[in-house]
Length: 192
Image (cartoon, rainbow, N blue to C red; front, top):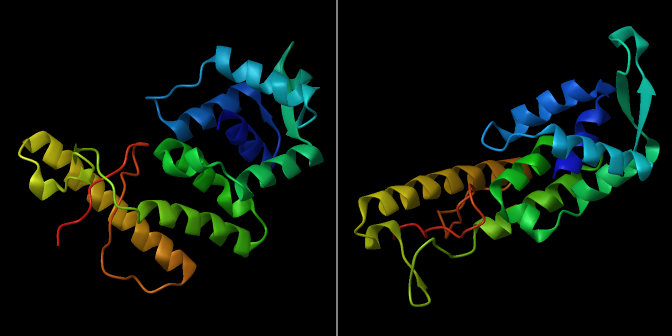
């Protein structure tokens, strides 16, 4: 997802490395900071692959450079957005990275196909906690903190499902089973 973030931010225009790092940190949050030891090797990989270019920026001082997205890089970014891996749709931080750049796909049908895949994931019946193979609902969990976790995740998932349906132009049906959008772990199904 770091590479997609780099390509996505450069799609808006050239950036120096330090500004790219700042934008990625704002997107991913301070709980997942991007270190120079992670960012610059990714930039080097993308440069060697011909997806981005570095050009000197003497106006910024000695040794400074600006990064540009190449045509090949734009094609690669669009492919990554059009065809995200399953784990990129089910893990909330990865999903947010996809969502941050989804509008760069020029075809609304492609955007909607990605949203439908996320919606299908959110509508699967699952939970963080199980009794054997049966997913436990918040109402079936005695621990108040686990119950709070399930209720919070349920509300977040319901809000996201409503937003996706509205974006797709669908009517919002009655609440169905949900997953936690903040973790790759499954979520609590709503009460009946």
